[in-house]
Image 1 (tube, rainbow, N blue to C red):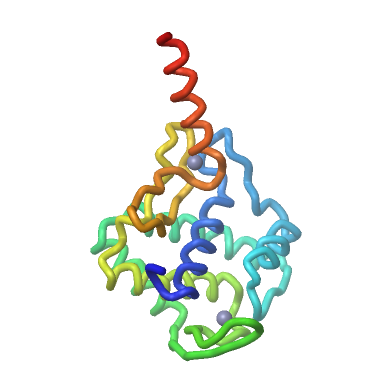
Image 2: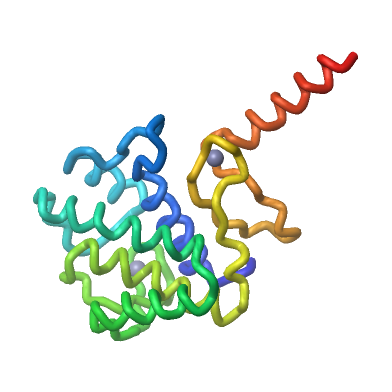
Length: 182
Ligand SMILES: [Zn+2]
Ligand SMILES: [Zn+2]
């Protein structure tokens, strides 16, 4: 394992959140309704306050472009953004355990707004990534027609495509190209 378990989950969760946005005209908005956000919250096992109000949905959606910048920023810019997210939320790291989770860090109280907790969880994970000088593991999918962000937690830093099937499509395209040459 490269980072602590909660850091890796937080990075994957932040990537999933960023990837709910429609970045290309051909993409669909995956957080179109409060029901979509409910599902995301369930899938990623977010505990704590969840109002289900439209304002909460808007706050979560507004967070996505800020988090996306972490995938494209150089280290100095990523540091500035992480510090900004932590300061805005008045983050206070505390060790906690709940449910099936052993000791891990929360830096916001469970009653803080969902978007604030999402911002801080992502920022706290980025603290680990930047301190370990591993920012290069955050990248954008290598497929020409995909802007989804990728967290490469592989040993040999080989993950180039998102989990949305781009890797398979690239393999099939390469195979077809080879067939045509015969
Ligand atoms: Zn927790
Ligand atoms: Zn992709």
